[in-house]
Image (cartoon, rainbow, N blue to C red; front, side):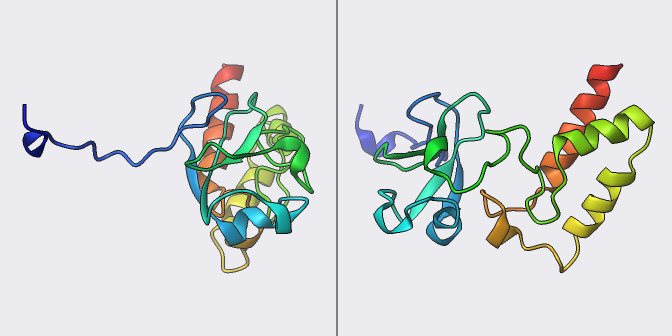
Length: 148
């Protein structure tokens, strides 16, 4: 069949060369803040963040060049579960666990409100360059459901 009549995929997903998970797009200024040696970072202008907790790759590009956990200046969530989920305000998984153990949402709710405020610096502090709000909510609900 003539290729002119075939529909191309609308997907622009790029997949981690190690674990195969779809990445989320990250711009160079964002990922360079986390790389130990930014002057020698091999990635393209636009790269991807691999959110698979068990994968050693943090950033990768279309040419399968990678930046691994060992190349970072600070630990990042979800690669390190002790790292803050919210890089701007420091809320960690342990903080959320404490909220759940206490039967409340004090820490989580305070962080969510701050993360939605002008004080949030997600493009500068988050390893993905995006807000943590969805991830905070996902983690909280997942852990709450796991507790029953």
